[in-house]
Image 1 (cartoon, rainbow, N blue to C red):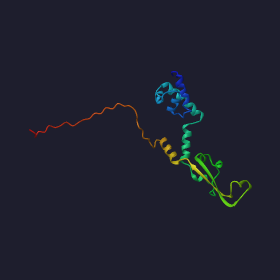
Image 2 (image 1 turned 45 degrees about the vertical axis):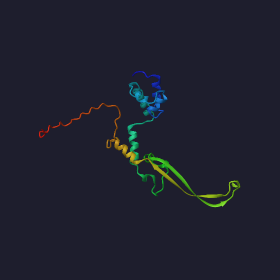
Image 3 (image 1 turned 60 degrees about the horizontal axis):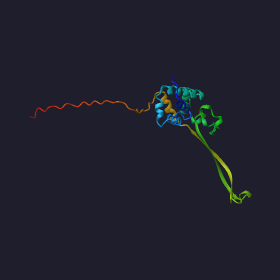
Image 4 (image 1 turned 135 degrees about the horizontal axis):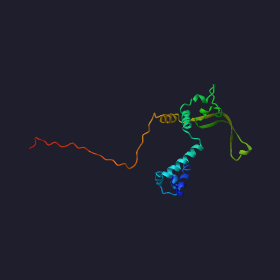
Length: 188
């Protein structure tokens, strides 16, 4: 492998911090805008980036098996597993691993009822204060997109193919075969 220039090494070092955005890393490394694509054509840069990517993958334990397992959890989650036998929501810390990992967000709202008006010593300057009484709460669980998980698994298994657009300069030759004109024998 050819040695990287200091600027190229800076580019390689910045790639993970730039979330593997080539243009952003090349700009921060001091290259002109758009030079990132040219850097990626250089074998020494590609080899150095492959090593960085491998280190990052090992550090965060990203494996094909783990990715497929996460997609499977999302795709095949059973929403009934969020509830106990009485229909009450199970606390998140008591959910099984597969079910808990499908949660994309949780919102918890308290409902209050305001019962009477009154003034307290602290609120003289603020005006009338109403006493409030809790009347319940609502918890919303947002699950990660199930269809997205199924689509990703289907693509992985080769069941779906993305459309690919080819961009670049490709020489194309077009040959047009024109029918020959017949000489009209009826014309004199």
